[in-house]
Every structure is written in structure tokens, then in C-alpha cells.
Length: 104
Image (cartoon, rainbow, N blue to C red):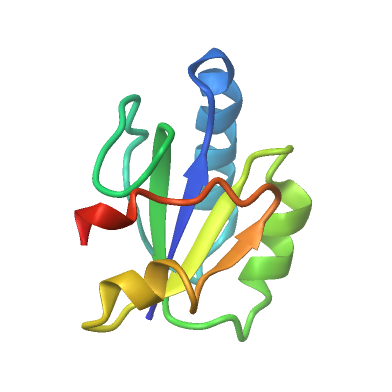
């Protein structure tokens, strides 16, 4: 299982909403997609929305990379070692924004 967090500045919220809708509409390999969160939450340093997927067998990561419209995306596995999942085991599409590690 993996999570992807798509980060957006508030002045591009409408672009993020369009991407969110496109993912929801086109990517049947996404298990769950959550609403846009226009504030800081958890370890995340920007507003974001989250999606869950099982694996990359259908090329979701590569598709996200071509469709992300300049947004940074954090992709990480899900285990009981959340700090490692969000740092050492993480993959970034676009700029690495980092996370608030002290949350863990």
C-alpha cells in the first residue's frame, strides 16, 4: 500500500481541484482519494490532497508525474515506521518540500 500527497499553494487551488477530479475520473487503480485540505495538517508543509493505491503496476506514478502540473507529490509506502516511510523510503515528483519530522 502507498500514499501520495499532492501539494498545492492556495492560489492554485482550482488547478489542484481539476487534478483531483481527473484522478478520480481516470485512475481506477486509486483505492481512495481524499478531499483537498487547504491548511497544514500532520507532517505536511503545504495544503494537499491524498490518495491511496496498492502498487504501481498500472503506471500511476509515471502518470502522476506527467499530469501533476508543476505540483510536488510525495509518494511513500505505508508501514508501522511512519518516519522512515515519509523520509528515507519516500519518492518525490517535483520539488522535495520536506516534512515536519517532529510530528512522528
